Image (tube, rainbow, N blue to C red; front, side, top):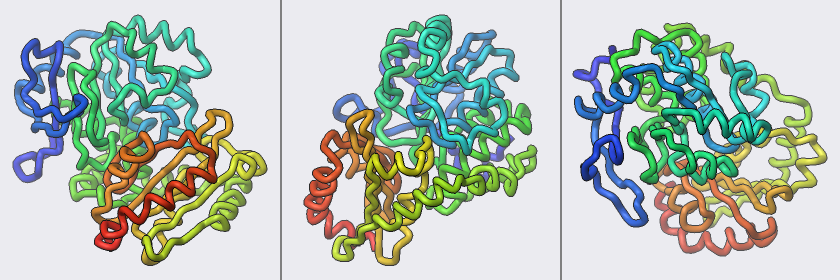
Length: 379
């Protein structure tokens, strides 16, 4: 068991709705978003234990365009729930990147986009649905309608800001490095840390490593490193995992990175840098899902830059996909919510634009002067 007497309890939870059958003891902001949370306590632990008291049919869902944290947390949780005697199935809205397709049991992940009928039947037959690494059902794309129609009880585990109110049990902590770290704390809070297997450890470590930029981001707390150490002790070989994720680039991806860096634009007065990627540039380099992962961080690494963005044209969906990163106190979560129907974390967020690429860039540049003081203060 993790020693909570000597550490801050990282398990910050919000349990509300049908399971409690009374008014929730939380504060709700505008539009139903939760803006505060409370620590794990005996009552909330008992709620989760009651949900899992007997064998259940459980579906675990990650967000659309799943990244390492979504895949790692979902697979890690599935191994844990199976060890408790439950029937657990992981379903993703669409496929995940090739550089993650070595993870333990990843071949068992269902892809809704490829198996609509089968995925729908599994969801309809489920007792509990865990949603991991997202906090609003619109983050699963076309899978949203299936989830909304389900009769199962929902449990949310997530570390993004402003969770929506759809689950009977919500474990939400924006200070956490990753949802994968939260899954470890979830196990520990239930008194089941001894169920940590090598397979769970590998999946959770991969999720933590990828979501923290190999522990470079400020979200990597002392507790994060202690959890990582426990995962390594349980069999997660950090050097091998790092190699499998970061050292298996295709020649096409490396050439695409060259194009991205050639497209880098720096706006010194705004302490901002951005990268553009056209659909043609992607097609010319045999783009695969995940190939642009991390490109935005190169823009953020420029000296004097505190705000970075990458704008990726997606002709198939008629949108421009946007990833935002920042340093210091400049909130890209607020920026994404205010301008791009998105959100995320203070220093990492995403969104989209329905305008074409050129108009999206022009609008972005026109918005920046409003934030000049904040960007300067973030230096």
